[in-house]
Amino acid sequence: AQRVTQPEKLLSVFKGAPVELKCNYSYSGSPELFWYVQYSRQRLQLLLRHISRESIKGFTADLNKGETSFHLKKPFAQEEDSAMYYCALTFNTGKLIFGQGTTLQVKP
Amino acid sequence: ETGVTQSPTHLIKTRGQQVTLRCSSQSGHNTVSWYQQALGQGPQFIFQYYREEENGRGNFPPRFSGLQFPNYSSELNVNALELDDSALYLCASSPTGPSNEKLFFGSGTQLSVL
Image (tube, rainbow over all chains, first blue to last red; front, side):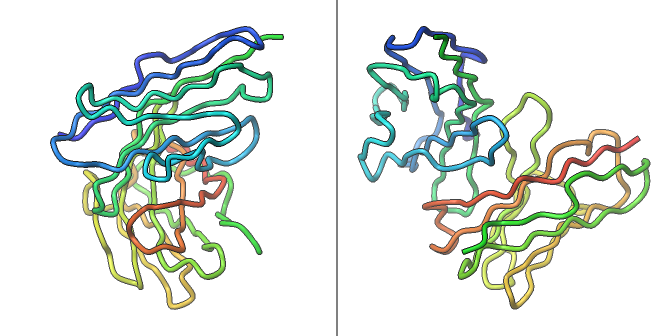
């Protein structure tokens, strides 16, 4: 079965430190991968898609098909990055499969 | 441009009852998906509607049903409520059809089943 795994429930870093939020998936085909973010008291929103290969708010994510991973990275964390982050995949069936989420806490 | 709106925001029901949750899609969005999010978990796909037809369903029993209307608003109906149905129910609409290129989420309806 298709599955998205985010191994860390909580990641706590200091402002200015590098951040890597891990995401691994199990799917034999070619999925499309996403990162969604939910800031405090806001709704879930798209952060980035692997297919667009863009950097949003300084975050990037590279799809590694060999390791079936799609880790989210940022070289220097900011306090405003504190939020819940969800990795998700779809294989064009109308179904988006989410991981359990990682809370990123950036301390001043 | 208005966003995705869901009603009600909170709801309390008892086991065995039926509930209807409503979603108003963002203007111009012809696809709507519903997700269930239990506490501490990621959202789980219930089903998707595209142009008023069901277009994919997750591992939810038939007592979870839905509708999409010509104006692209949507309803999620749950019959014979069980305690495990207590969760946040999220509606998400998309302007790009069922491909999930970008979903716009509502704030959700928090359902408590007692």
